[in-house]
Picture (cartoon, rainbow, N blue to C red):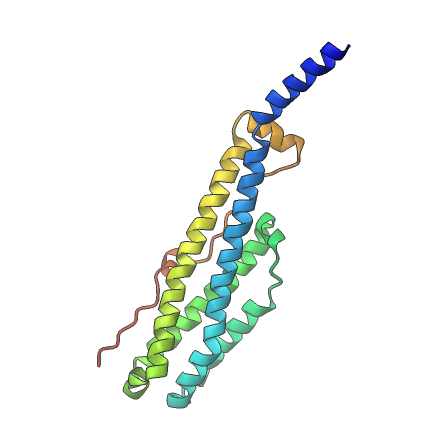
Length: 196
């Protein structure tokens, strides 16, 4: 009987080591970390918005509609309840992506309006904020790509044999990817032209 128990333990250990459980756990943690970085970069952008709007307002107060659009889009982004569990909810990811896309569009329109104000374009604070925004948009793109790659690796493991058996046994399911509306346009950083 002891020999059978020892043999069973060796067999169970060998089975568990090749079942993909640890890989699934590792990849799930990579997804969480990548998602945290996506949120961090979007928050960085949201934090830039009030300063950017206030700077533009000082030079282009008559552009009330565009300034209001940016402010409202940022407010909608802030109203979305963001949590680590969001990565498991395709609908929540879609709402988040739509709100971020709306903010991206509003910011792009704001930068186009700013082109009509030479004094604003020459303001050091505005140029600094514009550069920070462009850098943040690039960071968002990188963070989103890393997140998408982490989800892809996890989903491949969840669907591949024999790790798919482990995933089924532990209730690990395919995770939705994060996409935004008009993704090609949003993935491009806003054009910044400091020329006169």
